[in-house]
Length: 228
Ligand code: SAH
Ligand code: DHB
Ligand code: MG
Image (cartoon, rainbow, N blue to C red):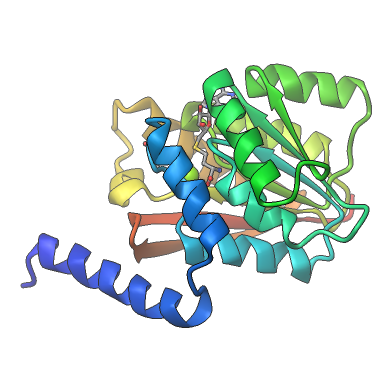
């Protein structure tokens, strides 16, 4: 039986191997991550190969309007912005004004200040306003904020969708804790409820995938909105 530390080291080494080939280091993204660390913000951004995966998903569905719930310091937003056409836009929702400040700086550094609109506030409030103002539909939605709110984020995501909208959610496995039906962790409860709702929604066709790598053991859910 392999020791868990050895496993983590191996996943990390394999991510380095893959990233050396598929996602070669870029100065601007290094600077973005350094700025994040310098601002004392926890590095809970997606890994480089996952960021590029989001970019590819957005490209695969020809996304012009992208919604992100959970900006942190802008790392995933920058990857998704790279998928956008000239007139494309991302609205990214963030609760912590300190995170939003660093994110705006990072996004400007990457050349996407005109494409990414970081909105500060509780995401549920921003989302309610967006529904009210008729700001949908989005082509691609990335859910990656506080996990207890995931069921509400799914509700709003559907309200801001059209048939064909792609929805991706991060962190749906949480080291495997997701299988604990009796977990008292509100993050686990939120993710479990989210998985149940997505899987049972007649408006979605969806799956979920476990991932290992430099960010540990987790997973993402992937869904497409069906015709009504
Ligand atoms: N998508 C980012 C990581 C997001 S981390 C990336 O991969 O680069 C989760 C973010 O959600 C944190 O910045 C946190 O402050 C924010 N967040 C937590 N609760 C929130 C809420 N209720 N509304 C909006 N943002 C929230
Ligand atoms: C956490 C949040 C994330 O979105 C993530 O990718 C990893 C960890 C967290 O809140 O611990
Ligand atoms: Mg995440």
